[in-house]
Image (cartoon, rainbow, N blue to C red; front, side, top):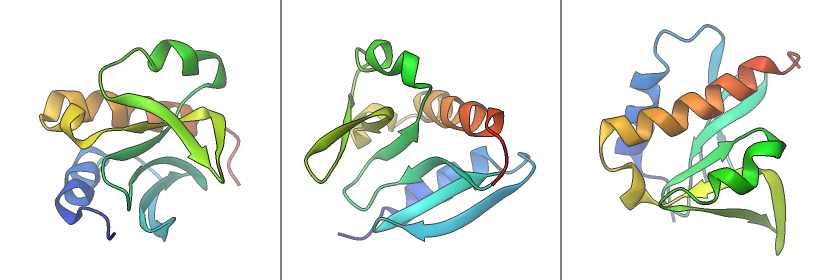
Length: 110
């Protein structure tokens, strides 16, 4: 499944003034990196993939539409999937994009 291009545009608009953002096709989606660190992506499976602080993973999983991100059947702490229905309005999308951008921006550049 290809990523949702409208969602990609919405993420791009939210990160428009963020310094050092690079877009890159990854994992069947469109990823947005800050300082070389993945912040958020329009997932090829629909919805978002968001990078979050590992220590906040469990709390953020209680948010509507949030679920563990799995790679090869293994849940990865520090990564979440957010269902498309949970980000259908700009306020909800902005919250998740901002979480991912803030965390990726806090990491050392690659």
